[in-house]
Length: 231
Image (cartoon, rainbow, N blue to C red; front, side, top):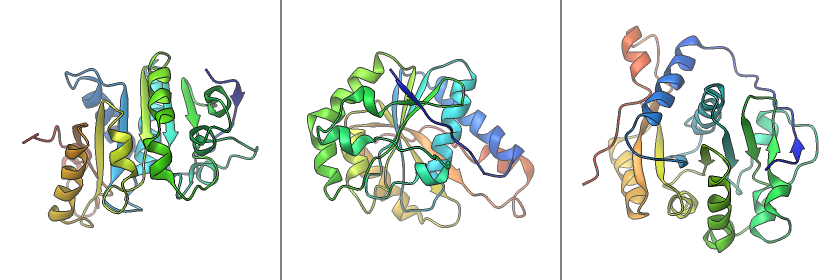
């Protein structure tokens, strides 16, 4: 669907353990036993590493020969343009949701294999209202016909309703939790909000585990601790 192209530059330092953990997450997601094309990634709070997990997961899915679309749905706090050092002027999600431009005008091909992207677009004061309108649902419906996976990177779910609203339109959700920074109570609150949206919780990612405190296997396996129980 992309008619434009951008160059993305990832300045993150190479981390073999992190990359292997992302591959494990990809594998667990692919063999979860349910058909999931559209997946929301959210967190409890800002700066838990959610966006990096989302992007690296998209890259790894693309390497497997699957066509993947990543959507920066954080209209309140756009970050992908700066994070991946995009130089050219781009359109984004907020402009599409507000009816200013077409879907084709916001999808960009990238220098990563099989990976296309939708940026968040200019800041909008009413993102929840924009996401609740029919255009977001139509976006998911149309892109499902083209892509094997659609990853939607949303704002933290505890402080904002955007993630829960987006999740209503999607097949599943992954909750990213920063190790030793989020209480069990807050993690359960985030889980409950996702459950109320009607979106299936595929699992959780325990991110930023301190290698110095953990043995190798514990570090490797801790990024994905399986399907959450729906009760």
